[in-house]
Length: 160
Image 1: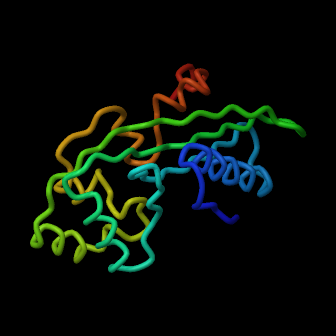
Image 2 (image 1 turned 90 degrees about the horizontal axis):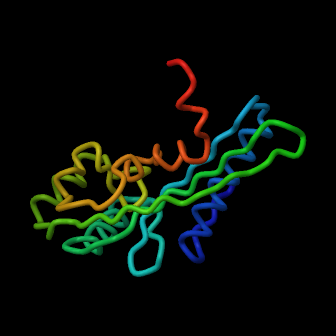
């Protein structure tokens, strides 16, 4: 499955979530299939995942002392030959602290930035980068649970 990285942020995260859900369905996943894509938007542009440490450094420096949006695209495919699709986008505003060189170097040395949209993981050491958030924390982690529950309210009825 190939993800897209260029274009308007909201349609891109929904399309990537759609592609992930379709790949799950094509692999034979039964029942409801979920696809989720999370990315970071700064100034109307998606940052994506860094390929290397210099790319991570550039992203984190760009976020330093600024607000950005974390977008979580969610697509749910219902069972059936022509499954009904439900989709939504969660938005969370995150403000980074102004990052000094020691903090930036510590975080980069941790390697936690690898494979992370925007080059950080709020639920780990990346929490030291954050000044504040407005909205859903679970969206920043990577699965916007309140959004998912709006799309599939029956999940609340299922025994754990």
